[in-house]
Structure formats: C-alpha cells, structure tokens
Length: 346
Ligand code: DNO
Image 1 (cartoon, protein in one colour):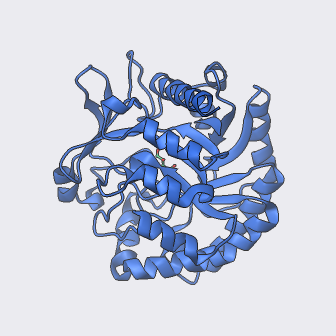
Image 2: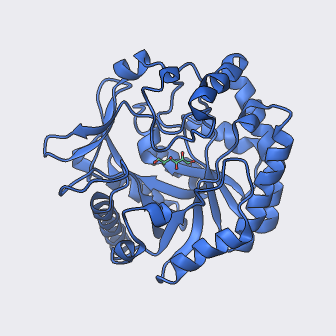
C-alpha cells in the first residue's frame, strides 16, 4: 500500500513541509479547488499543483475529488456538456500522471454532520452526527453549511436544486449513475486512470434525498454496471462503518482488487444513526482497525491509503477533520500495524 495524506492546497494551514515529515507518507491527495464544479481543469493548473507537490519530494497520483455536477446526478439534458468536461478532466489528469480519481454521487450534500467540534472526554474535539438533530434540520434555512459541501449554487439556489430532486428516486439515481459510468469509464481506461467512487457519508438518505452507495449489496450493484479495472471503489471505513450492518473486513475481502483507494478512520457508534468520530486506535471506537488492515493485507492491497478525518488535539484549530496532528498519529498507527502484519506473515 502507498500511504498518502490529503492536502487542500496553499490555503491549507497544514503545509507540504509538515506532511513530508510524517514518516512513511509518500504521496499527496489533492484537487483544484478554485474552478467551479463542472468546468475543465487545465493542464497548466494541474501541472502547477503537481510541481509544487513533487518539489517537496512527494508524489501526486490521487485526486480527491473531481466533483460531479448536479445536472449529471439529476440526469438533465445539460449533463451532456458536463460529462464531456468530466472526460476532459480525466484525460488531463491522466496525462499529468494521476492514477486514481475519487468522486462521489451524493445528491447536493457531501459528508454531513450535526456538530463540527464535539467535545470528547479527553478534551479533544471531533465531528459528530446526532440523528435526532439532523432529522429535524431543514437545509433550506442555511443553518447548516459544512466545509465539504459544494455551495456554488449559492444560498438562494439551494432551494432550486433541492426542488429538482423531488422526483428523483433512488432508481433514477442509479440510472443516472449508470449513464455517467458508461460515458466516462472507457475514457478512464484509455488513460490508465482508475475511478474510485466514495461511499455516501452517512450511508443513508438525508433531507429526503436518495443515497445509494451505502452497503455491500449496492457496492456490488455498482461494480456490476461496468466490469472494468477503471471502475472501482474508495472504501471509506468511517463512512460505511457508521451503519452497524456494514462489516468492513468482509467487504474488503469481497471487493479486493476493486478497491483503489482506502480511507481509514474510526467512529464510535451509538444507537443506529448517531456517531462521533474518534482517534484511529481500535479501542477508541466501534471499528477494529487491525482487522480492517489485516483484510487489506490478505487481498494483497497495493493501492493508496490515507488517514481520514482526525480529531483536533493539542490545541490545534483549522479545517474540521483535517488538522495535522491526529491524522499524522493515524498514519503512524496504520503504518505500524502494516509493518507488523507483513513481518508476521513472512
Ligand atoms: C470527507 C471526504 C469526502 C470525500 C468526497 C469524495 O472528508 O472523505 O468529502 O472527499 O466525498 O468525493
């Protein structure tokens, strides 16, 4: 496996100099953040980012994410143009040495939480999701806006986008996803790029919007749409792991080589539907991280992996989930487990 670390570009408080000092981190996961969703990322822009990263001795082979325009998810006629742009992005990224592109197909909202600074018992804070709070929220009021969301539709546009989803069932979403895959996967194949869909976070419908990348059955359905080495998964332990019926080690063994990118984090699940994020260490949460990594080792995982969200510890403040310290601890923990598993195996 290749250990990577997410970096949000020059605006990120965490610097490439910080990241290169975390032992074992080889590569950066990043994206172009200042081009509106649906438009083409130029070769120049990608090259500029790549050079910046490589000048620090790190690799840039994974993009997270190339966002999918809502018109594609909605299956509107205008999707034709947005899909052409998406294909061009795949071509441009492929030419610049990108091997894996992470994306998701969640309507309107990316990862969702009710609290960004939930105080844990050790004084650190982390992202949390209280089902009772989220169920009562009305996203149209604008009371909730999370850093992972694309809000390019503007505050007034949100109602409009949500209205367009009124008639979109989960089956419609599957159809629109299939259409999208049939268009883009052949291009990814030509470029030698692996597309890796990210599961829905949390993996259940929110605000009345369908969510379909949620469990083993649906991941299998997704992979069966097109059987291609370029059609695969980002397996995110924290996203899928908040649903107690999702058995992560089993999924890893099942999907094996179709997993191109692994996101690892731990969560503490309360009653089904509410959770807090916690440190990566198994005993801090509901997921057994050693078992998860053991499953990756068993399937001969050679893809990219990254610590996912971390807590804010040691007084750090910054982008929720994406501070330096706790993610660095997570990376070291995983590398320690991996090294041990390899030694024991040999
Ligand atoms: C959360 C992330 C997600 C992820 C996208 C992938 O921190 O894991 O925002 O990047 O859903 O498209």
